[in-house]
Length: 415
Image (tube, rainbow, N blue to C red; front, side, top):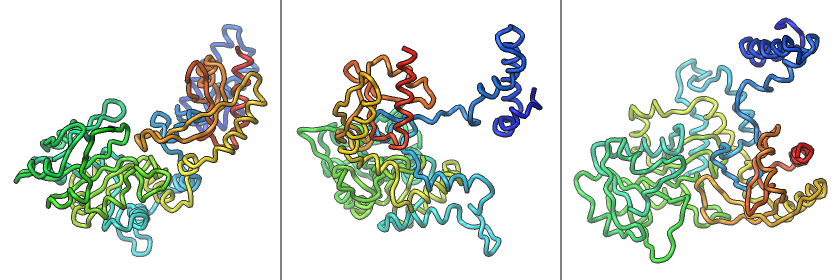
């Protein structure tokens, strides 16, 4: 069976063990009389996955641009091509001209410095939490980190900032109150053991009303390094996101180091970006922990391509034209009996711009469609709201609209 030409491609793509296991399953069907012997090879080929991964390509019809459970930012085509280029042997740490060892990911770091001119130096680690971990460890291990009580955040999957900081060997010293913290609170808490001040953007919630916080510019006057975690990866001000902090302004205001994620608003791969003064970034680079947190060659390639790209799928989804979204929704609804076009507010997601509405449109279907759509190929992840399944088109590439129609029709035939 393994020598059958129908399985040659699968053997090359998936390996002998995977194909052999499926052959055994289909031969058992033949023995039970469920499958003619001559149909066994074709049945094996049909049952085998199209790629050597259990991950599925998913159509994101939730309207959430940076959906953490769906992998956050989809990569730009140029970044996908860069990953393929970097998959083999590369000059990631090698100078082709001299034949000597070179700084790892030097082109990516140069692109990042160019994107954030206010940063004297930059470093890339494997995610945003790692960037913050490295910064606080290098600056405050065995010492104190000052942080406002209103910025003691918890993000997804139970990850809590206080636990991260204390795991570094630093002592967390809370200042102020949940809703109001002043510069005087920080100044009063400072002492010989103060390693740094941590300024955290509470990116997945908002506190409104009787509130006060201290900006980076004022914190920088206290004479100790300020670590600004802007979280969502906005490198420069964006008119669409007026309340979202960005790396450029934090550095200009006097932050010693800024940390953020690469797979959020930047629209790149999972990575932690560290930007700041030359002395502080070099201190982080030389810390033993930096080696454990470094990124691989494919991440460096994807990040470089993202930084150089004219646009990204994330940028496009955030700015999707509501008029065009409605036109697409109406076209889909016309092809689907019983479907209805309804207004639908999208969201940034990924812990960015909480509360920001992204007006758009969706195709409304019965609630019972949600689970079967997830079980289709490709799976379609929709939003269930007020007893309806909503297919929000903001994050669905327009070229995939026919796949949505096919998916919905398949569910309808199986109902």
